[in-house]
Image 1 (cartoon, rainbow, N blue to C red):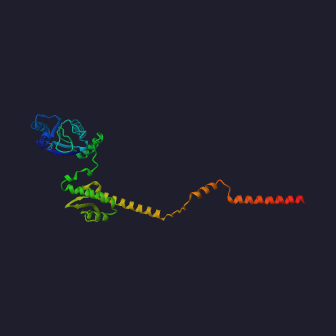
Image 2: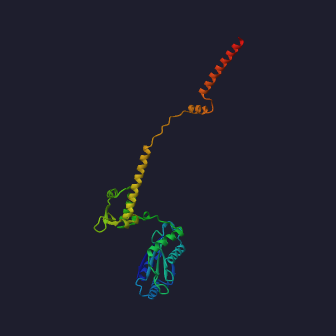
Image 3: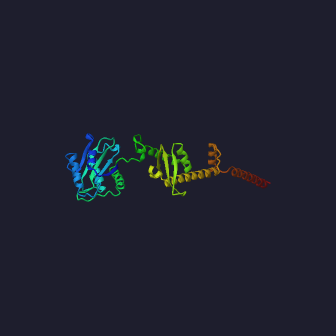
Length: 310
């Protein structure tokens, strides 16, 4: 679930855009408005906006888009409920609201028009609206167990136009190459082979690097504009980590190769059994000694017998 927020001054334009879809548009919520037709809806919005003429952009327009994977779950009632909960969390309440579901795209989505002039003529704040919206979209996606698009990989790039097409190409190339490089020179060399030029941005006239710019197909983007993980400082940290990891692997490999190798003589089963049995049998040398002492004792006995007989 993602949201796109727009402010404006022309209620007629946004109402016509939302409802001029014929069979591809369906009103889910119409609160505080005369909903007989587009003209009465527009007049209702404009009448309330005149309660606070100091606000030059009273039109609020939000597009809520969901993943195609959740299409089977997103009934009109569910989408209306999520839209109203989103507005509540955004602080859009006690005002005129129009929620319309569109069916002109393959992914489910609704358009919301609301009056930034509330029913009591106060102004509905839009401060940090996009930041708050991103957080709320994530909260509701988790709450309702909706599909979480992993990141830029989920974008249907074949439908992109320039310069976004090149921007996403750079995203993929950087994600791949940064993982395998240990320094900036290696990264620049690998990218150049794939048609990407890399330049550093310096602070004033000093040698202090302030940022990095990548160019391809005639379009240039700073690293952080491609993705936050590709700012100069974060790329530099990733390259240093790769270098240290490679150094650690090399040291470990050298240590293993320097250790003495233990040699084992092959042992046959007969030796094993004879050695095992020997643990419980008298030693051969000991047995021979016992036998010799027995012969000596016999000789001494015979000598004594001879002496007696004499």
